[in-house]
Every structure is written in C-alpha cells, then in structure tokens.
Length: 198
Length: 198
Image (cartoon, rainbow over all chains, first blue to last red; front, side, top):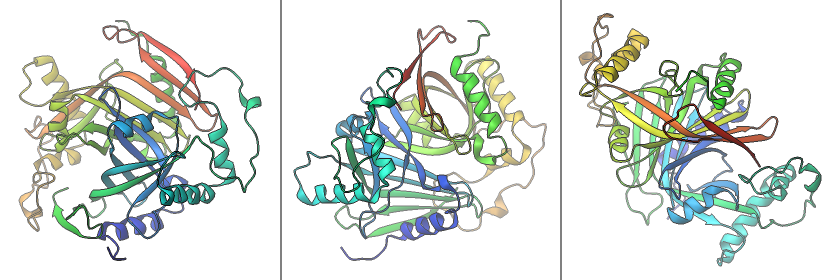
C-alpha cells in the first residue's frame, strides 16, 4: 500500500472543489439493505477521507436504522450527484461500523478524531432523543444546549467508514462514463478503469 | 379508491413548487438491490405521478442494470433531497417495470403516454449504444441526431412506476420528521402518519 491516490479520488476531489460554493455539495445518498430485505436510502454528510486512504467517513447516530442494516449486511452504495458540475459518483463498498464498544484501539482513536473534527454544535444532536422513535412533544427542554468542547465522543456517536471497491463516474456535461474497479481487495491503491457508454 | 391525495403527496408537491427554480429539484436517488446482493444507487429524474395516483414515474433504458435488479427484487427506495428548502423524502415501494413486451394494454398505453411526454431530444438517448458496456470510441456517428416526433416508444425505452407504501419526511429547517405508512396495501389512499424524532 503506497500513498498513490486512486484515479477516481482525484476526480472526486476536483468535483468537491468546483462545487464547494454549494453547501449541499458535501451531501450524498447512502443506500443499504434494510433488515426487512428492502433497499434503504438516506442523505448523509461527507466527513472526509480517513487519513490518506480512499476510505470515506460518515458520522451517524448509533440508534439509527442504518446501524442495524449494516450489521446484517455491510455493503453500501453512495450516490453523489454534484448539481453544478453535473457529475455523479456511485461508490460501492463495505462499511465498517465504529462505535464506542469497538475492541480495536486504533479504530477508537479514529472515532475520537472524527468526533473532534465535527463542530461542537453538530455533536449536540447525539444527546437528543432516539431518532425514528415517536416524538413525545416538546423534548427540547431535555436536550442540553451546550457541550464541553473538550469532552470525548458520547455513546450515541458512531463513525462509519466506507471502503470503496467499485466506482462508477458519470459526467453529464462531457457525456463520459468511467468505471473503476479495485483489482485486488488487499491492494487499496490498485485500480483498473474502463470507459463505458453513459 | 378515491381521489383523496395522500398526506405526504401534498408536502412533496409543495417542495417541488418551492424548489422549482433549481433544475436538479426533479432529480432523486433510486436505491435497488443488485443481482450481486449489494445495494445499488443512482440518480434518476422524476417524470410525474401516474394520472391522479400517488405512483411515481421514472424513464429508463431497458438495457440498464436497474432493470435486472428490479426483476429479481421489485423493492426500491427513493431518497429525494431538496437543496433549497432542506426537505428530504424517503419513499419506499414496489416498482412495476413496463417495457414494450408488457402483456397489459393499459400499461402499454401508460408507457406510450410517458414516452410522448418526454422531450424529443431525451427520446434520442434510447437509440444510443448499450449503457454500461465498453465504449467503442466515437460512436456518435452511429447515433441518429433526430427522431420522428410522432414515432412511438422504441424498444429500449422502459417506464418504471413506483407504488409507495412508506414515506419518511424530514424537514431540516423546522427539525420535524413524519413517517407515513399505507394502512392497507389495497387502499392506495389510506395512510397513517406519525411524528418521530429527527
């Protein structure tokens, strides 16, 4: 494993750059398979790559349905459409679910780092009521309005790390489409690419 | 079955209205289960509701992977995020795949109607080379640049009709979330709704 950037990663960094004036350019849709065997799909926020790797980080609430989905079936596909440059990235891979009970100290460290990288305001949401459960009226009085900025991750905070092994890139302006496949699952940075019909 | 509008449909029509200045407001992400058992996710375009129903229409190429996906597993989830009003609709349902070989004359009529509702320019793409197959260089010379506007649907044109039975609505401005469930699969317009925690 070297520090060679995967060929699709540079395209993605370029798209992020050229769409950075749009708040929603860091939002994408994450599809999983629900515990009922049906597809599930929701908008999440890109939280950067894990260090220098190609792995994509997502913050989520440990109590949300996607955690159960991913524990039963670890595969997911990101669909990321850039509304200004008309580029789409479909990123298929395996998701590592890292909550506070993870036995790997390196992963716990990665989770802590991602926690501190998020804004103190966004950390507050993990202290709110259980997402998806019936709303019991005005619970705002029960939710703290501030959090010690030096406090580590709370138990509801979970880091998802998607390790891509297939990327489908589509550019609707140039009408070009390229599929990237990881050649060897052990070699993160060895990718083949093929031009295909859009 | 009456003409009563499903409660989430009015919210969706309002969102379409308030985001109509954005070209991409009619784009959403459609998740299916691929033939490899992994989730698949791609951007598609909203082509309106089927008549006065709650069913959502999508145009697609009969040669694309999603057709195989849906024939093996008819379930899909739409994730539709409106970037200006900060609203998300997650629409889960069953997809009817209507191509030219469909035995139901009513469905063939529906497909023809949707074909003529799309622009002559967008109809041309179904005459292009097989999507997803290796690109054989400059094939633009082989693709017709115009099509008789009165000609009916070509064989590669396929209409997808998603019949929703669960809708998860999230408003990030008001921080409200509502889940809608079809009470009885036979009664399209009978829905229950619950406020849940975002």
